Image (cartoon, rainbow, N blue to C red; front, side, top):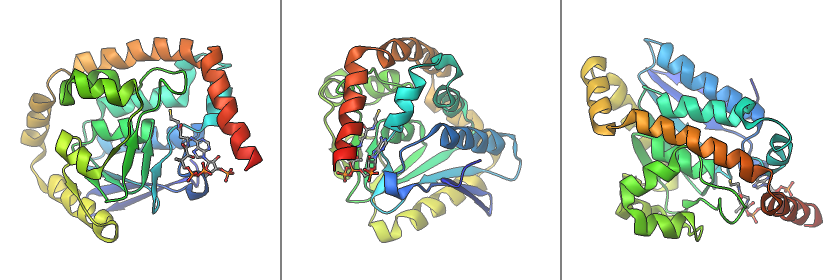
Length: 251
Ligand code: COA
């Protein structure tokens, strides 16, 4: 457990709120562990019918904590809390809703690809700068993105690390609606409550049908993990992490 993830269960909806605003909700190992447990518990619970992910004002999540990446590169990636969380995320059966305000970088963006419903404030800015950081995509994004938005746009987002905003997310079919920041969480909670109120049998069966190839998604997560581990240790990645961390120190 960590104080940087706040979990609240209300009326069948589990709210998972990232709460490390001074670091734009960058995810640490402890946060990944808590997120994984929160999703596994939701799946095991009869009382929880939907999950909502939210962040802080202006920061959904800045992705993996870059200091943690340096540490992670010294250990087998197989043991990393990040990979355990990603595996859980990919197999979670409880419907998930994202309320994205501000930056959603790296896993902060790829997490939303797993969500059943995504709502974004006008300030939302999604970015997957894996190549820029010397890495490869994770969380099944190399499988989910081209299937959802086609190879051409995926190339711009994953190779050029191009950001997309809330309007573009809706246009691409990666978000359901743009919602003003002051109504964002309420709206996500309301929609999650609607999901939680649906009968579980047909909901699960329909979710399985429309998500189609679960086995391919889980296979992509594993293939990415092998490439990701190799990239984590590469000089390009180590240099990129050092450049960001030194920049922070100097600022
Ligand atoms: N890991 C660790 N710390 C992070 C972080 C991350 N991923 N993202 C932001 N932070 C920290 C900064 O180091 C800084 O900490 P400090 O105040 O102790 O120096 C604080 O959060 C604020 O970030 P800063 O860069 O000063 O704010 P900004 O408004 O100029 O930019 C971001 C915000 C999120 C756009 C920018 O911090 C960023 O690009 N972060 C890296 C995102 C990333 O590459 N994630 C990994 C993807 S795989």
